[in-house]
Length: 191
Image (cartoon, rainbow, N blue to C red):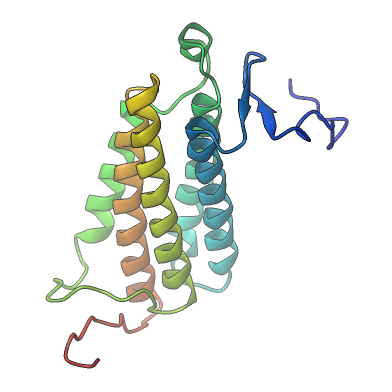
């Protein structure tokens, strides 16, 4: 059980933060950048859920996105745990989470119009929020790759973020389609 009785501790005033297991790290270290970006992504997914209010895509996407928020929290905890033995005992993203995203991508992409150009972020409020989350997810993926070059991370961390960014792209397209919104296409000559 988690208990959070105090929001501030003053222990981070020196520019460090506590990791799972008690070690401390500089707040701008690769590990903090990685799980901090996952936290930012989780907040963006929360905005996507709020944006779904009134959307025809809500019934299908909200349960998926709420599950993803829990998976992202697990991933953040995993990235905040430098000790491999301790990390092995924690909830983490696994191959089954990647497979679930792949199934959802395939199901929702099946009836979408074929792409003949790159899509510009937009296509209604829900789609635009999902595209923003997708770009944050790509940054989280880059941060996890960088961390993985320096220290061990979970085997599925990068794979999960890669697949999630694909899923957020398809979710954005699907939401635009469900809400009868036009997806803005890249037109390079219109510059």
